[in-house]
Length: 270
View 1 (tube, helix red, strand yellow):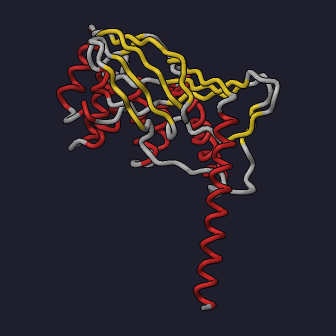
View 2 (cartoon, helix red, strand yellow):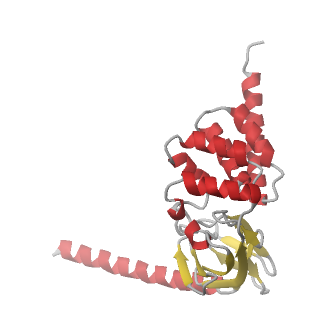
View 3 (cartoon, rainbow, N blue to C red):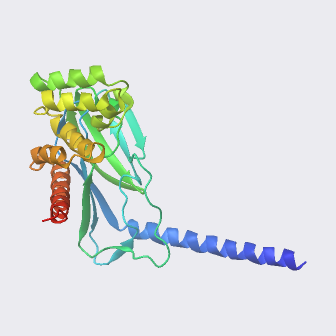
């Protein structure tokens, strides 16, 4: 009998906890609804297969402080796309990885003060086959139920060096139409992938696709070949890129390389 009573008490406690979680979730949603969700593409026109970078922004237009969970825009967003033929496409889950969960009790809350905003730029994992045809597209993002503004995007036909680079990608990488938006990852996954990536950078580093391949090659040199000099040479090429996300990442890595080299130099015997 004591065992049954104990189990019943635990069951009631769990029900109370469930009710508290539900109320918390409702409060969280209410707080989130006070914010305005807006997005902006890093440019208006793209080449087929070219990654799309998006600035996600949450604005507090009220005179109150809004407390919520730290925004995980890629993890908790989806996008609705209308292609040039008028077909509607929905992509759920814009992250290639699963990150984090809800804030635990006692953790610091994410705060957006009155009349303030929070924004960050990132590359949503939209399958490249969705926008591999030239034409005009419309995109609308939804973050935890908040709908963004509708943004226009145009995919243009590659010409000149861009066309040659496009043909290389399309011909060398199997199933790229179903792969990551960052085609450098796909190149590395192919047989002799590192050689393909190096060849691409050598031939088409100045093309519209070059900055992404160079970023990937620098990462490859650093992470796989452990060659800081080669990695440094690649990141130097893109530290002033018009793509601020790529440029900022390159500058950050260059600082880390410089720091590491200084540490190694200091450890050398006199």
